[in-house]
Structure formats: structure tokens, C-alpha cells
Length: 245
Ligand SMILES: [Zn+2]
Image (cartoon, rainbow, N blue to C red):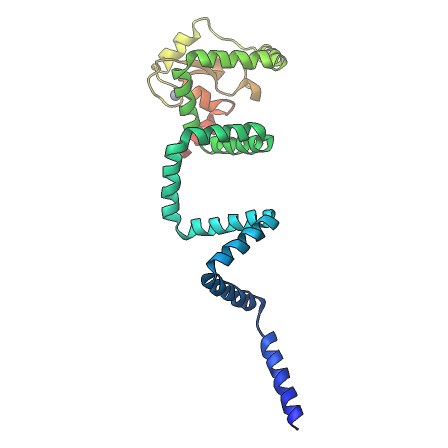
């Protein structure tokens, strides 16, 4: 009888133990460890050093997780510290980033894709920035264009050929003094944004690339900014884009 009771207790005890979930077990162990560490700081440091030396890969990973958690637990303070650190070490960090960027084609691809996405979403800002940069760096702009032309001669030849061919195929009539006539007709204003024209470019309303004729009926004067933005859009497309912005 006694044996049966004892056996029953043992089974119950065992069952009670197995009821703990993995999570609870881990928590229990961690609490135990903390307690031991607090009681034996010297030993704890030593054993930690030994474990780190024996498991460098795991140690790095756990450091990363530890510092990430700590950063997020005090995110405001962390950000402030990071700002200060960056302020002091700006040049060094930049140089380092530059080196690692240059060494990683993968990173370059990603950055380029991100940049392109941003530019497409912020085309007006992009154009404004480009304009400012071009105005501030005339010689750089010239050299850049030249470099691109020299690096892609076939592209440029092809581009010139198609443009000439298109013009030829779609040759219409253009009066000699068309720019002056258009200027009078448009009362000196850009055909799209209606700002006073200080500089102007002759724009094909329906672009040549989209079948528009090189004809008097298909040209207007636009400010350089509108002409850039319009690019290969039809007037309708461009105007609805302007209205949306
Ligand atoms: Zn304009």
C-alpha cells in the first residue's frame, strides 16, 4: 500500500515537472543563471570569456542581439548617442562606407535601384536638384555629357540617325520665322506653365518618338523646365501630370 502511494507521488511529481513549457524552462534556467552570476561575478566573467573563446560565431551573434535589444529599449537615447558619434566621426565613417560600397557590387545595385525609385516618385524634386547642380557646375556638366557620349558612341549615332529619319519621314512645313511667330502667338508665355519665357525651347507637342510630325501644327515654345519634364509625354499626359502635382 505504502509503495503504491509513493509510486503515485513520484508519478505526480514527474508529471508536474513535465508540464513546464520550453519557455518556462528557459526562463527558470535563466533566472537560476542570473542568481548564480550575481553571487559569483568573478567566476561568471571567467566562464563567459571561456565560452566566447570557444564559440566565437555564437558569441558574435549573441552580442549583436544583445546590443540590438539594448538599443531599442532606449531608442531615444541611442539615437542621440549615434548622432553625436556620427558628428565626431563623420569623415571616418563616410570614408569607411565609401570603401565598403566600392567593394560590394550587390550594395551598389541595391542603392541604384533605391535611388531610381526615389527619383521616379519625386521627379519634380529631382529636376529641381538637377537644374541647381547643372547651374552650379557648368564645366562638370559639360564633361559629364562628353564622357557619356564618348563612352556610348553607338547609342549616340543611333539616336541621331533615328531622329533624322523620323524628321524626314514626318517632314511637314515649318515657316522660316516660326519661333518669332510662335512667340507672338503665345504672347511670350510658355505653352504649358504660362510663365513668361526668358529662355525657350521648341517642343514637339506630340513627340516625334510617338509619331508626331515635324510640322508647324505640332510645335510650340516651352520653357526649358517644362520641356525637360514633358520629355516624351503627350500634351494631355503632361498637363494631367502637372495638375496632379
Ligand atoms: Zn513652362
